[in-house]
Length: 164
Image 1 (spheres, helix red, strand yellow):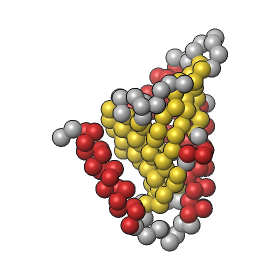
Image 2 (spheres, one colour):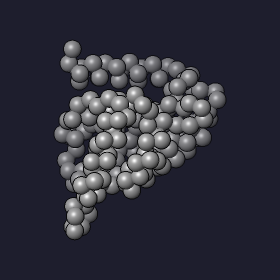
Image 3 (cartoon, helix red, strand yellow):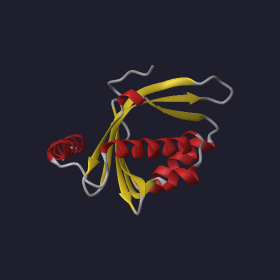
Image 4 (cartoon, helix red, strand yellow):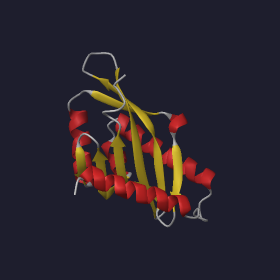
């Protein structure tokens, strides 16, 4: 079965399911929003600063990363290798959340889903920072033992949203 087709079916089922689900009584929507904004901020502050130790603390061992152009990458080890290689090259990538685009929704008994738009900037050695592009994302966060961990990422819109 085609991965895009399967992914679209799973995402549709997820949206239908969450639209009828009751909100988690243990987490108020405002506090959930703030918790996810904080987790996102800490995760991407680590990403932006090549702080792989902190970055690793925020991702699950079985992380699944779906990229519309790059395909599926499974496992924290693959994600960490990608981050370490990027940082070792001496070029810098910075992610900036478009805060006005952010949506956070509870996932009863699991955590939360974060939906939004983010912009990436790239700096080659000795050059000025340039915008790489603006893209869409969906991130599924799991709340376990009082901490938030990134479980699933869908990064898309790379062919729809032109590079700035």
